[in-house]
Length: 226
Image 1: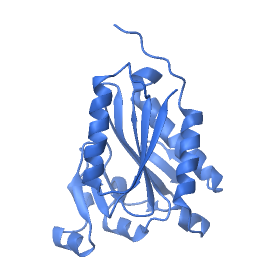
Image 2: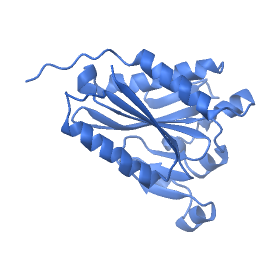
Image 3: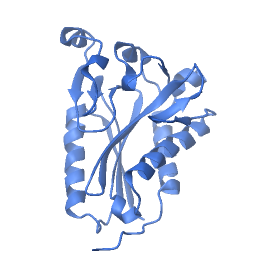
């Protein structure tokens, strides 16, 4: 199975969105016959809040002027999920994947992304968990101390995916205090750095994620042509 990994470094969100869209459109044009099953993009973004297509504006707690003061933007985008933050020290991962070649649906794909993150966290001695009706990866998910370490938001059309997940590694968590993260008002946010007390090598995180993707992505099993 052909998987390509690309590292775009620190890139403005709008620019990454446009580059993603180009990869997505190309895959849609060749759905079911792509030579590359998945292009997995790694990047970081300057401070930005993104609000999913069904997200509530009220979950952004700052005015436009206040956003400017902390040098952040807020963008409405075409993924699922509510509001989240992206910034330096966070490992963002955008898999542009042809699900028709893997013969899996969107629910199974999101489950796969969660498992990639859970297995990555395990490397650092952190137990990641799922929380029912709350996409993403959590710590102490079923306790009053539940806190989110990874947000997931995906768009899928014509069997092709874009967007993906944002894993807090060395993220400045103060930015999350200006929103209701993912729409929640009663749950916290954390990072690998906060949980381990150590600054984490992002290059190492990318390597672990890539290795985990290779292990977990199902074998190519194209859907029958109609």
